Amino acid sequence: MFSPSGAITGATVPGFTTPTYTVTADQPPSNNAKQYAVLAIGGTQANVETHSVSKPFTVTMFRPASLRQLPQANTATGIVKNVPNNSYKVITRKGASPAANQVPLVARITTIIEVPAGTDTYEAEDIKAMLSCHIGILSNQSSGIADTVLTGVL
Image (cartoon, rainbow, N blue to C red; front, side, top):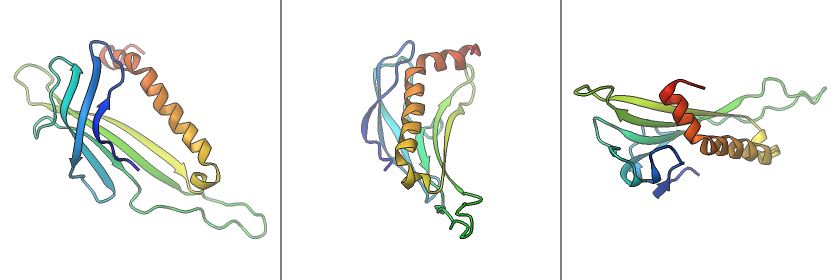
């Protein structure tokens, strides 16, 4: 269950020392979502601002509005055709000004997790491994990702 609470430890990125983000439940944009706003920051993060109306800092997780299940297999062949996906999405939003005296714009990170129906129960360990690897690489490479986003050099 997606339910971050208290101070969340941020990943290592250049210029930040032990970054933390204290979140609180916020009103999500839809009934199939949970949203949290960053109301406090910790560690060394010079000039970083917390959530406000004009400069949002939120993390939202969406689940499918209607969860899909694995359909019945063909009785003659045992094959399941057209396996549906359940799509989950995590969006982080952060307001940031593009230059001095400019209106803040919203930067976004979106992760979409597509899980074929049935794999969540038949091979749950593979789904967990996929998530562990994806999140681990993002965390492990957070400095490199930040450099690429800021410089454009991959």
